[in-house]
Image 1 (cartoon, helix red, strand yellow):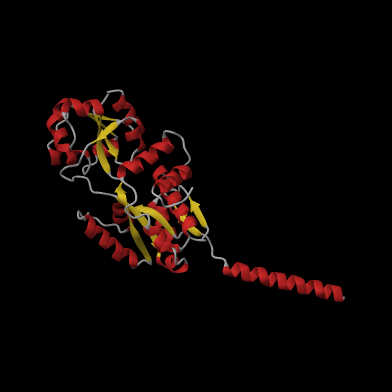
Image 2 (tube, rainbow, N blue to C red):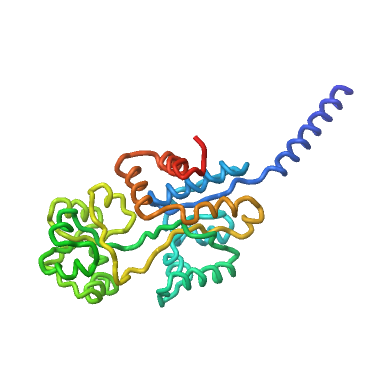
Amino acid sequence: MKNMKKGMAVLIITGMAFGLFACGRKEPVKIASKPMTEQYILTEMIAQLIEEETDYEVEITKGVGGGTTNIHPALVKGDFDLYPEYTRSAWLNVLKKEEMEKDDDKLYEALLTEYDAMGLTWTGLYGFSNTYGLAVRQDTAEQYGLSSYSDLAAASGELVFGGNPDYIELETGYPRLCGAYGMQFQDTVQMEIALKYEALKNEEVDVINAFTTDAQLAANNLVLLTDDNVFFETYDAGTIVRKDALEKYPKLQGVLEKMNGLISESEMQQMNYEVEVNGREDKDVAREFLMQKGLIGK
């Protein structure tokens, strides 16, 4: 009986010690990403910076279906603590704004105000925008002296434009672009998104619509033209985080701010290329980049 009591006491003390340990241990910082390579790399960067700078554990949920549509409500609910987002995606898909604010600074300030009311905040922008662009082959750029959309407009009568149906048929897409710059292409070819780069490479078309951080831009040595009249709005990338997560993890704010201004458009494009074309792991590409920037050790 005495031994049994002694055994019970040991179990109780052990259980209490375990309970105290568990209470003192924070849950992991929960990060979400949209189902795209770029976001996988960004969440790996954030996670690795957190692990380098703090003793917090990190949990990444990659490729949440529906992107913003499903991540935002889950963030508000508390299922996630943070995720990478794009300013105008938030403006259109979360805030449901019908009118687009053209001024980037005013739009960002408005986002901060509206997100604050939801218990969320933006901790800054990474330095690159993933927005619409126009790409041509290097030889086409050299032949017609193309570096900007205005240059393209002047030569458009001799060129064929290729794009996905959604973009070409969208009233605010291709038709508005041509009207804004006075472009009149020799012909327009509709094709699926996955076929655009191949068609450009094979000289079936001369110009395609693209996203500015597409891996295929680097893969095919293409020229991304300058939007000299700023027709396309910027979709600047940055981190959205729950305000209570910043309170729960006091070191988190400083870590997230290290991402601000860190990545250029060409650097993001190259990292996407390393994963999508060269087949490297997103976590390795992220780590290599952070090491090059001197933010983490070997």
